[in-house]
Length: 263
Image 1: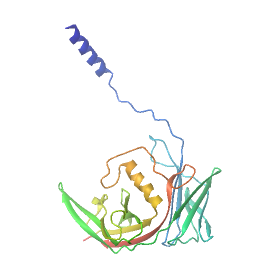
Image 2 (image 1 turned 90 degrees about the horizontal axis):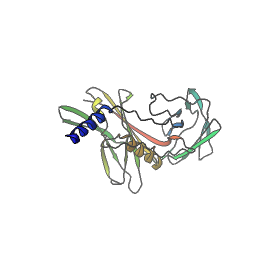
Image 3 (image 1 turned 180 degrees about the vertical axis):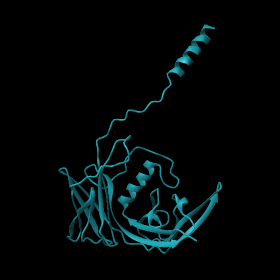
Image 4 (image 1 turned 135 degrees about the horizontal axis):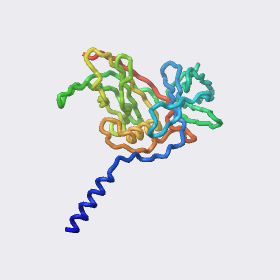
């Protein structure tokens, strides 16, 4: 009997001590977060600079103003960007071209961040078709990007979808030709396409990106648990192609687009 009482007392003690615990995560040192793009479409091109925030902070990232931002190409052209609004910098005369390498230089608070990206050759986006699926009482419409992958060349792709002019893709969608080199590809964009409805105007952008940028987005998808079939989540930061410990990426890529009406 004494043993039973002791066990019951222990259970009551454990139950009475149960409470919700909020992990005391040390606030990390705020890091610079950079997102920059140069494309073969007409400019201006934009570089955005922010500061990271703590784990429990609101998703409001402070803008970094007053930075000196430049983009140069391998032909000796340098464009000094203008800050059009807090933390947003735009080019003036630079025009992106396939086959050329572009270098980003940012100086802020006496620290210089640098990155480079080589713009791949463009791959035509032949058409966008639709895949209608249903299951569990829900109907979905998914876009299919149709294109010919060039043989004998490593190609890396990124896709974005717009509905009635608004970016609606919640997850990053990337693709490489490791298993489909030289094939004609009908690539279903398995993103959150439940937003697509009859009568909508759907625009699909296909970007040819370089390997470093593809690696960045691939690791970002894995760490965030996003993507079509990704269920893992890890706190690790993706490998940025920007120096001096900055987060983010700098990408020189081509753009090919198709727009259709959902019928």
